[in-house]
Image (tube, rainbow over all chains, first blue to last red; front, side):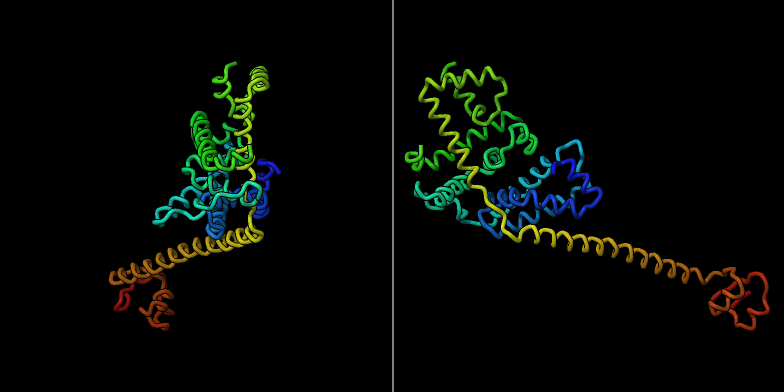
Length: 176
Length: 141
């Protein structure tokens, strides 16, 4: 179901429209929240907050913007705010950012190492690399979601990938 | 194309952000003969694939939890919007009564029946009166 069909559904049957949005977006919203917060319970709470913001704000959504861009924007800003709030309330660094490096032959551990590398990124770099490489958004879409010039999106993406590469440096010697 | 030009465009290339077939062909032609730029491309593709593979799946109960919270929120908002209306109506009615009571010291023209209901005239007096009467707290004129 595309954006226009969901908007039509929201007009005729709001509850059905909300169910469709949750069904379609729950993995994206949760994954984004988990990547920013590194904790399953906090990620669930934040994902719920994202959807409730979408439901409350849908009345003010302007059709000239893409629904998916609007949903991504709410998701990213809510996750970034939750991460900042968490950072302010903690005096020690977040746990997942200090996960041990993975053995290259074990897929799950390699995934953990990549997640740890993403967790170490500054938030503005993290948002860009997640939107590009995890969500497969175009530079133009990312620029619209984050309200940044395309050149800034490109430079942040480049920097994010370089930092991930540095973090995974030891593994790359085996994998590449 | 030189390696410098390729490096400036290699991210756009792996991200499918180059739209001119001619540029894509030039980059591919260069990489066919340049191990260093090929390695750079492969490193970027590796990071892209690893980040894509690090996506989390939502837990099974998330959708139900979100929809339940939404329903509760919707009910809560109905109650929250109803309460101020009720309060406002109550306050307005109380204010009207108060204003009426305060003004009752001055004579007010009402029908005899209203005068009886307000306790200013007896039922027998009300039955005998026509038109309107001026009532005060002490009685009627």
